[in-house]
Length: 208
Image 1: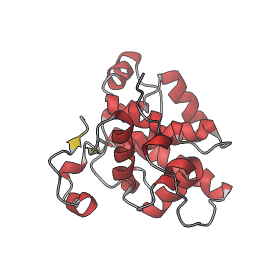
Image 2: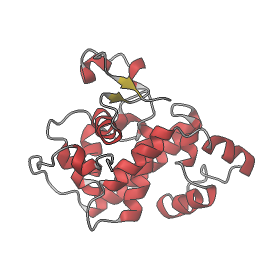
Image 3: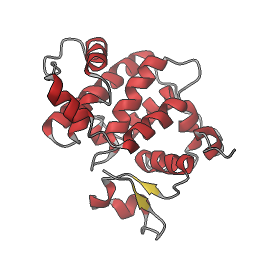
């Protein structure tokens, strides 16, 4: 029986040039920044509202917040009916992207924290700005540092050093048999041609 290729089968893994390892203190700083920014941007409306849930049941989200973002009063419980309404609007492509990231987690790494970052990155990829902006980071280098630390196989597969949001959707498209898959918000960006070039006829935007 045919099966969809895994992220490792979708593209050959050839190591990128060696970069300085991401130290634990920096990891501990950047991961909470990214998670907090996604939740904040969802509340403010610059990310889809479902991102307030990170695709988790509320009990799991609150446990994540207590562990990753202790003492942040903005992340309080949401009435159950409202939370359910937010969660049901998470697009299928978000869950597929989270699965892709988790499948490419660094072997022997912290799977729990990698799962948190996978959900933050997946939600931020639904936004209409650069990935680093929706993750609340200082620039692409910080995105690269986090991906290198938590998702080394995926990081190593980006041998052409293309933009991370574009790369992740290309990987997802290969895995799903949908070549040319693009992030849902990029079509509205004035810099889309700089990131992607002219849109080929076979390109497909992921549904919002």
